[in-house]
Length: 607
Figure (spheres, one colour):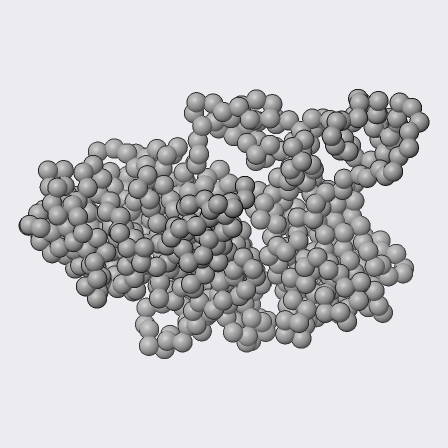
């Protein structure tokens, strides 16, 4: 018999030793500095260990306000799993430059109730530079909450700084920022390692890492109660652990682009729909409903969530003007795109009686992308091979009346993802660039991001995509005033392995007059999957980066109507593959799989 209690005799476990495991899971949360373990009789004990959480900051995305000696002491040195023995000369610590109020940030990629934080400080004559630091966290509603302030630092310097559960706000956060002492004359922040501990083990041995709650708990529920149960479940789930599926389960919740596109309510949504009629759409499925309902101009596909590459400024042809209520009789259509794009599917809207007509689709080099009949019951034609082109020619077997031709350009995978920027001016925070709202580049509506003014810096904005994607294009909506500030911008992608890959270098701005809407087409996209997009300006005095919206397009529709959004690859392709080739085949497979699509289990498959 085992009994586990805190210093106030509150019990978290009373029962027998579990079979086949050494782990005893408490039935309620204890917040204590002393843990009393009582056994039913005297036994030989080899070791008692107390779970203190898993480091959820390890190898996550980081940033800091400035860099000392270029990028030798970059922000990621504080989450690389090595503190260098607190030795600053080991090049394993971060270091800001000292000319502005220093901050360091780590994006945790999920929401956690933090159990404790350990900071490994440098251990030399400058170890007291960290005195007076503070810590904040970003909550689900985007608010920054106070977590800890180093109010009374000891007179001697510290190597390890532990911030325990008694000093931490338990509201789930997905971002931690450490602020250096702003009253110090040096204004330098150095961190040799930052450990952020969260998670508790579950009875299956897995880590229960998302704020202690079962995955279907309502996001605001912290589950910090006696038995980790949920007080409220997500729609479609019920039961104390929200693990019982109801008949009305919703896989996604869609927000209306025109009526419900605000950053402060985005946490209730997983997608935007762009229906033309805002009053007739299903917020459960995202499907535009109602008679003759269609997408807003420039959008297409399921839930009107895909960009339509056939919409081009100055194109007044009824066949690709974004209006399905008009059209014309044609036998050949030539669709000129905005640039060179990866195209995998088109929509051809015709009357049902004409759906058996043969059609041939080819690229700029007259290579066939599809040959066959217009499908019945659906306007979507899926290509038999990928076409990378700036011009699509569609030839019908006879003259027919065509209402609209749309070209799938991908789905925005940056929407409402985690963002950061090197500095911020007032309310123009980094997340404004992925809130689904650009307001035509109107800066005064406060829907754009904006870095701080009046400093010598290299402005930088970053979005974490939450997964690895084969990017097809990137669109940047610039502000409608002071547009030349974005000149010379650069775009980079970061792979799963942390490699920073150049995507675009803006060298042609002197020959471009319209800088409202910047499209970086498929010809510039990397040939490997990326999980992060960075937009930077070169170093200089008073350099300012403003972004009213950043769209990162990936995904292709599949024949079952779902998104093929992780990349164009089979899930068993090698993780470095993009499959952006003629027939979406894999050059190499994960262990245990073979075949051109890596869909055949090998003889020695490991499961």
